[in-house]
Image (cartoon, rainbow, N blue to C red; front, side, top):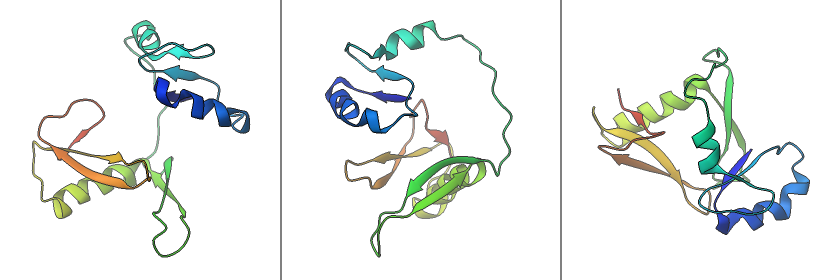
Amino acid sequence: MVVTTPENAEKVESVSDQCPFLERFLLVGGARPGWESFEAAMASAPAKISLDKTRSDDPLMVYFTSGTTAGPKMVLHTYASYGLAHLLTGKYWLDLAPPTFTGTSQTRAGRKLPTAISSAPGTWGPLC
């Protein structure tokens, strides 16, 4: 699945034939042939969903290092390591304390920028 804006849909389409695993294309804030409306999908989504049970050592996502000393390398995060990394960054690097929320945002160059705000909703997590 890919979720993007109208400004980036053409970029996705230009490489989608190289990504056979992409099964769903959601467009936020616009309409385009071959794309589903993100807003319509959210409006029709069930209020409750069943989730698979995961273990803390199950793979969650792969990040790429910045490549400052060599080429970028893939780094696997598990369900435990991803949250723990945010907790440690917030507590020891950003000197945050509850009830601050912490998260990261991605730049166009792919660099992660630590971000901290005191009342951010959504996918941001509380610093416990």
